[in-house]
Picture (tube, rainbow, N blue to C red):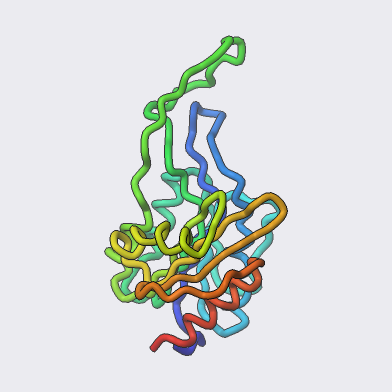
Length: 212
């Protein structure tokens, strides 16, 4: 696939879920992977839309479209507006909240309480809806775990192929001071271990350029 003029949507960064009207639960996603992929695809001539959460050191894209979001709900609304049958590739690298408070307080919870209890419920799998909206798109998913082996990469990504219809998945882990990732395709073909985000980006680009 030539990437020149391809319409590519990338999601990146953390999603917030509110506890009350001033507090949220978030995660440690830096959004770096999404930015690295976006920059490389822009260099290749692709038409990039980056749907990005609240990350440190926000900066504009060199070209393309940058859409910012904060909460999980705003992410879903922003993403859905971009998912059409004109999209060629979706790269879903955002760290979507897996759980959210069952109820959200309308005003700030008092800071004088000795303790509070939050009941969390599972959030919908956003990745499972992407190909229903962007029917012609190649879908690149990401699976993050605390540790990652080659065997883990195959088993951990299985549902993303079965339920989301991913074409390829990056199975990765940030382990203390090291990073490890594998690219897995729907046929179970897996790359050797990759030890940096930059190497992951190059493998994703090679995969997209290789497919017809």
